[in-house]
Length: 212
Length: 369
Image 1 (cartoon, rainbow over the protein chains, first blue to last red):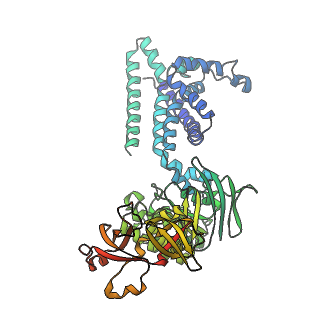
Image 2: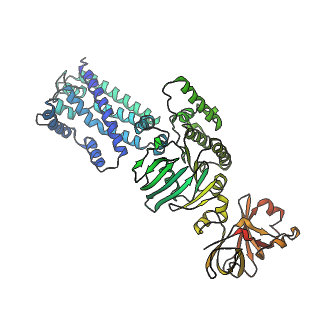
């Protein structure tokens, strides 16, 4: 059995999960705490990949990351067709799941509790660390698990900007497509089985999180 | 000494508060939506007034002109919230310790703080609950934790927002007494918000009646109950008999006021002859005259009539009394509401004895212009 797509998928998913945790949580905190108009725009932008076809997301990323895109212009950095491109594609499509879930959880924390912490001498950051986040942790973790599951399964946008290079950008979902195209059904079944188990495990994890 | 003089525009009215208070219990009393909680939040630094200043012992907490708005964490204010606002993810002990500063690792200081927290837990009677979570406590126990938590960082000022409103009557009673004792022990300036008149009267060293964002009257509770400044206060502090009258004559000590058909003698007032006044008569100060006790000689403003009906809350009975002519309120079915304790009602056998002479003592009458 060829394990390399699995290892690559896990690598991409772990890095993407770290990314959606950091960026998603910051976005969720911002969205949960501001009332500016910009908020609606940002929320729209974050959620767009949820409803756009993955190929469309991939196309936008191709433009952004390509030779004429801002990343290349600013940093002279070509990310296209690297494993990092797969990470970015996974993060963009998984972000809405994390932000939605975390934002709802953060908004659900009783403001009186945060006010109580303020009168007890805590700074705003201490309030977030000692009251808001601990109380919202279930929604945050649920969003993270859903997001990482989505990142693990990412196909379309990854194909557009990562390509399908075995050992470099060929993650498990891409390898399954490849194996079926080539009639290697044993390879395909093996990968399908592994991905199904991982998906089930994350659903169970979310379920347990929600039941508390 | 806390000095508060603030303004804030709210959707329905303008908050316009001005008062001073010291190491005593000041009760902010008023209907819900009068701006009581807003006032506390402004003092605690959770809400910024539009204009004005808040000072405590010379320290400026807020000043719109000098652009000072000290954040809540630096104001040293203990705040007990209406629905407790205990941290559900922390134990009772962790809740109480929450605002106690880490004493920079020095063992002596740490153990001193621990002893301080222990003492507080003991003081409010929750030592045995220290390891439990808030969800495992009754309402009264949660309120005790909230109180201990607010006191733990040694605040300069204690604010309580209807802390007992969700509790059953016996628990409420106990907690009120404990709060009084705690306040006396720590000698802490305390502001207590409530819409319960009995609670306000029991706790207040100083009572402030609020209505639509303003303190309408502030002073000793007994004084406000007996001499409300205007009709809003009179209704708020439970004056049951408010009658319209016209001043017919007056001298230094007495006013003669025509109330309906009745010529009432009242204490002196600034109202000129011919002025329309509102006559406030507290229901518990109307006396049923018992001939055998020789009350005739001390009687003032005597009406004769019958008891129409009564209502009771179990400890007090409210009698609805209709006078024979001359009456106070000829267009109404009754003239006076009279309140007395249930045991008096029973002792006087009022369920059968319905004809009475009643005396409205002058010192129980107050005129509002």
